[in-house]
Length: 220
Ligand code: SAM
Picture 1 (cartoon, rainbow, N blue to C red):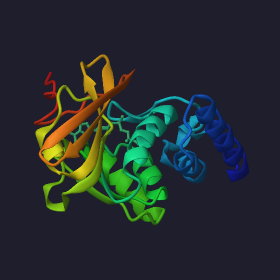
Picture 2 (picture 1 turned 30 degrees about the vertical axis):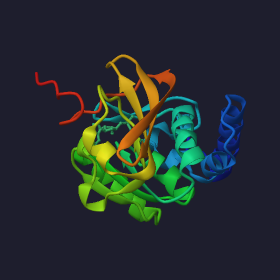
Picture 3 (picture 1 turned 180 degrees about the vertical axis):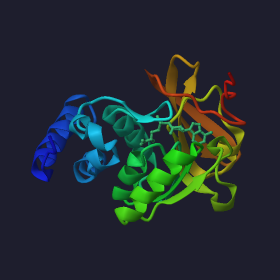
Picture 4 (picture 1 turned 180 degrees about the horizontal axis):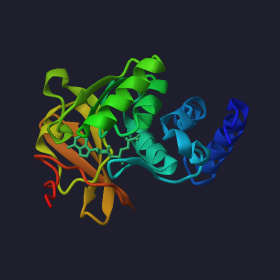
């Protein structure tokens, strides 16, 4: 059954109430979640699940992250970096980029899977989102556009990618899940000149960041 926009609007309001009950309190984040139509970032046949608080497969072994996870990472960033240029690593469906754009950031995003990159780019254009997207290994950042006030990595990294630290502006923040392939600790790293301060938060389970400063790709 094809649901109407008003049904999706109601489900989206319920999703936002759920986020609020789970402890997400940043008003700008909650407003962005109300505004961005998550179902448009879902595979067409799966849209009736778009407002469940779940990660969902988007093909190529990848997922659109759970709304709570996106809200959690975005809140960590927004509380320290209210505006400016933000680099997202792992475009996936394009949803996290759209949330950052709705909050007024200038968004840059990198994806390594060509099909996902192309689909996300099509969505950005179709929805009129001024997001800059690039295909490549995001563990190396986006040198030509650096520095960034914020960097969000939406895939699990085994260690802090040097390039992403280097591409932060002074006072800028990197939000990154660091750990093993099974579980990672959400980590917020703030640049202070040539020094970096680290704060560690809750545990999550992401798909791996694959690249030069991430995990090696498994070859059959
Ligand atoms: N932010 C996405 C969204 O809103 O739909 C969800 C991201 S998904 C959990 C992680 C994404 O990171 C996948 O699309 C994956 O292909 C991508 N990825 C993994 N390693 C990468 C790398 N080195 N550079 C860029 N993207 C990468």
